[in-house]
Image 1 (spheres, rainbow, N blue to C red):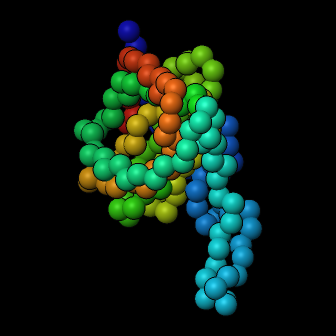
Image 2 (image 1 turned 30 degrees about the vertical axis):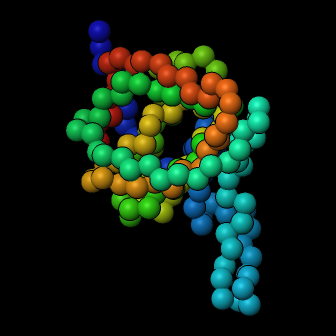
Length: 164
């Protein structure tokens, strides 16, 4: 079987819009001066969707180890009941792999190279790979749903890799 090779593209708000939100100062819909002019608030960066079925927001840190290159894509996941937001804390770029909501189609996988100052918020039901640290062990601030119900579907992927 022929392998599919994904070539990552830069992470931009426009390119990522079908899958979720890019969390960055550049993507802010509005900037507000607060704290007596000493702080700029980059407002409304992501649409969090966390309360379906008695869910509640939770804040965690995920510590991810890099995987060998080229990166083999073996599993994708989705959270049907909520969004899931990741923001890098370690000052390193990372890889984002997504596919549209609905029935999983490996032909529709896309890879994005996220910068050190860019987070992502996956819309509920968006297929995504777990966090892919690239250079070294990296921490991510994660905002997602905690609560009753099955909120993680996984599907195996074959013959797909990222080469960059």
